Image 1 (tube, helix red, strand yellow):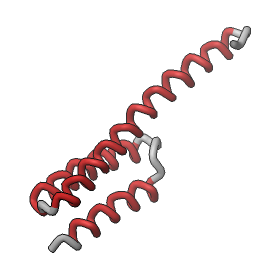
Image 2: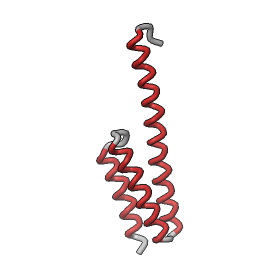
Image 3: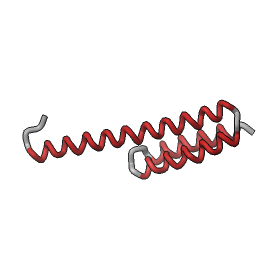
Image 4: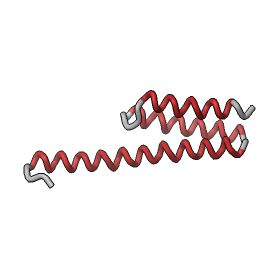
Length: 87
């Protein structure tokens, strides 16, 4: 642990940021899993609803900088293509 007061504060801030980012990353993974599960079930209406919900989560996390914007676009695109293939 740091001895200097400013370094201690930095360590506290980094830990708080790490926990927040971890929570957001987990939310993205869960949203993607829900969408994939709906796609695997073959229910297009449910899959579309899951896609909309997951896109909102992905966009929110990407806007915060936790997820790179290109990675966010890739996740959304792959889910959309999978749903389009259901038809």
